[in-house]
Image 1 (spheres, rainbow, N blue to C red):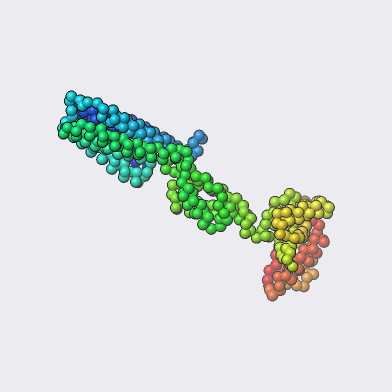
Image 2: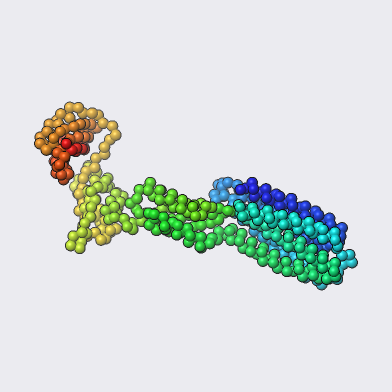
Length: 449
């Protein structure tokens, strides 16, 4: 895109320079002030095109420490300069046309030679307009638009110069200046329009309709609870957006990232030149009450773990219960204070809950490395065999680390036995094993037989 943009500007520059040379030479030879003025305008247009070419080169530079959004604004600055140049030229045309209408006609008037130079310049202008219009439609660019306006202005001013020369040849001297006045007003309007557009880009103005379109896309993306602030800006041909979305507070980080990626993809499909940054925030709206309790308690100081969270209603009241793991070394009084803080926190943040029952459990850190205790497995097997409901004893592993004994047991029950009965039996077995082995951490895996 950059190579094509600069190549087009280079071709435009060469074309307008050739028009300057032809108009200046023929204007001086034929004593055509209109042609010389148009040649001066072509020279000024050449200077502006050089500036636009430099702006396009600078705009393509990648982001750096001082320009984290890239250098696209430089292109807008080039467009602004081009617009100001057009306005100054338009003002000059208006002024010059008024002044010349008050002067007597010169002794030597331009003729066919001046018209020939004018028609050559018209051909150059038409070529530039066609080339620039096609390129703008394909790749866009503020510098190309500025040069397009210049080419259009060159065509208009050259036509006026030719009309003026033609009118002078038939005796209507003032026709040239009246036409120049009309063109000056038109060019002033076009230049002000370009100045407004590029200065708006430089001040980060953005269309409210575009912001609304982005908000609609985000809001319609699945799993987005709500859409917060949307901050947008434009740099060159690229737009940037910082978007804040709210997601359910109980979703995992991976899920939140997947949702934000979908938001980016939906926006990219609708607005290809928009680069987005998504910020997601937790929202408790529509989050199940049990998940709220779990998240709230898990984040509290001195809470080592939370499980078996449930809530239910009875006679118009809502009750909650949960198992909370705390440091196994603290005493009952300390543990109860933690329980009270948990209950206060739940009722403060989830006021619809009337009462909370907290089951406290000791938390034991399971180490990564154990020593196998073969002799303990025989004792454990004897304890298990005391239960007639256990049809078969599988693998028994006893691992020791300091004062902790990690016991893993596989055992089989009747396949038709209810899971509730199985749970009761495994709980009894755990307690029986714990009564023989202090600080044991027991995991019993039941299997059907």
